[in-house]
Amino acid sequence: MYLKLLRTKLRKSHKGEISIYLSLVFTLIISLTLAVITGARGAALQVAYECAVESALLSAFGEYNRELLERYDVFFIDLSYLSNSPDPKNLEARLNEYFDDNFHPEEDTNFLFYSDILDVTDTNVSLSEYELATDRWGKPFAKQAVEYMRNLVGINDITEMADLVAVWDSYDLDTEKYEKIKDEAASKITYSDDDTWEQTAIKDNYLSWIDYDYGAIGIMGKDYFSLSNAKIDGSYTLLKRSKEQGSGDLSEFSFDPTENILFTEYIMQKTGDYIHPKDDTHLKYETEYIIFGRTTDLMNMTDCVKTMFYVRAFADYISLNMASDKVEVVQSASELISAITEIPEPVITQVVLLIWGEMEALTDMKSLLKGEGVPLIKTSDQINVSVSGLIGLLGGSVDDDAADAASAVSSDGIPTVKVNYNGYMRLFLYYVPSFVKTYRTMDIIEFNLRDSGTGNEFFRFDVCADKVKAVFSVETGFDFRFYGEKKYSYF
View 1 (spheres, one colour):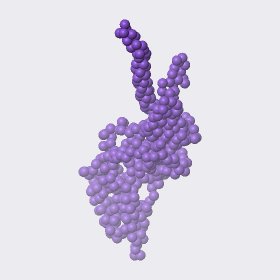
View 2: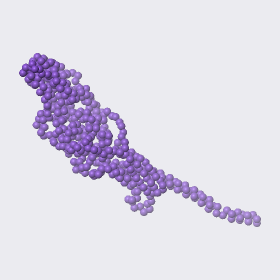
View 3: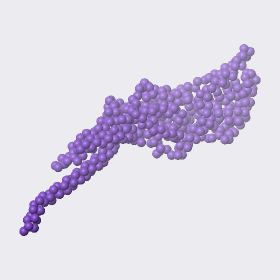
View 4: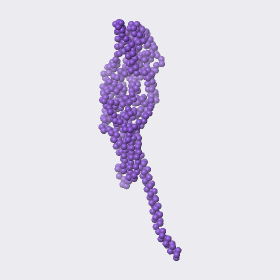
């Protein structure tokens, strides 16, 4: 009886202990479940944040200027978005719009029991840095052009151009140097009070030939009057106008000796010139503008023809000096003229060779302006103008047999590299300072896009971006906050 009462008391004293135990267990389970859910929510938000950042940047950078890509194969975001109000805030607004859309897809859905597990309450994107096409003297644009050409220009093309440049440099074919040589030759033809009428006439004849100005009209003949006279507003070119500047420093420095060749090839492919003009362009002689920078086609072509002529005259003068047979004939005639004029024979020889080189250059220009090739440096048998008659024109005489012999002997060791009009354009472009070449190429593109009738009438390169650094932030109702900086560019 006593044991029975004891069991009853014990049973009554432990009533409800299972409920307490289960409550404690369920508390732990619920806490663990909530922790797992919270962790899952945080992990999901982390993934969603990273995807949203990437998606926003891809979407914004997918809005590059279409015509710029189609015609010139470079990617840039026009910060004006085809309006007359360029502003980096336009790109920032686009990024904010795309970034926010990735966290609120429910705004475009009608699911009955849809619930936003992420509970994003605020998103924000701000541009901390951005790079414009014209920054650092146009390096961003030039880099894209070079990268595009890497896929098109083979090693043989680069080697061929490098060899041509090497030949050019080895002979130092500089028009300023040629002018100095002419000035020195002219300064050695001196007058004396004792000069006879014949001596004075011969000296005047030499000086008039040395100082003769071979203008583009005389070189081109009637073709000169059919040249284009299209023009641009010189005050609105990139070298002259004030430009917008990027924010921060996103530059990457590198040195590649082939970049100049690749950018030169880009210009040759994308711009027109006298021999190969392109359709739908503001200027017809675009390559000539990039080289000479004048505001009209006519002035650019005039400068081009004259420069090319003097380069050819210098090259032919060098060729004649290396052709020993030609020099010997001129020397024999110069000795006779020296006896008459009392001018030293070496001076007369060089004057005659200078003038002969210019006569030869006139024949070269006829070929070049037709698109035909001419040897950069000629051998003796490649000289077109015969010495017969040239000496007589300048005040002397030469034996016909000697003249014929002079035209039949070739020289050894001279690189026979033929260069046509476009070849000279490449060489001239190669030596134009990099920033000048880049900005003038961008000028050409700007004017062409504004004239295209495709909504780009306000297009400007100094409001075009290709690289940004942006700060992305997210806040949620569960006190989750994500903050990060991301740099993005086309290349």
